[in-house]
Length: 201
Image (cartoon, rainbow, N blue to C red):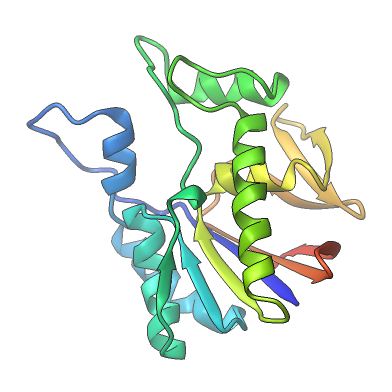
């Protein structure tokens, strides 16, 4: 069976909030940019799945809707597939958090999630999805950090020339912590065992 993990990182940046949304609320509700919508339309032909899952974030659902329409199948929302929780930033920023987490997989801000915790949550969620959908091809619309957390358990870890965490499979970089427009990771499985991993974005 084949599992696709999709993250569309092209979200609307020009947003001003008049009320006091938390960092997490802003991240959950942030819509795709126009470029993100166009990218979501283009990626449908890269995927061959008959089951669709999505996190409950607006950007993931907005990306999933194009594939759901293309294949005429429903989207199953699972909040366990959401992005890693940031926690309380205070006067710190997300870049600093990511830098620290790449070097210590247990590091987190108060109320947030470490990479190890994200790894555990994503593996529990995806294991359940795989068992529920035996011998079906599945696509999960989620988030880059969540994908990184999931793959942490299976891929080789290293650092690129910019000193950012990368995950590799058979000496090929599958995912790094540099923001790309879109990530489509194709995973071949047999009885729950990973046979191959490829970044097809």
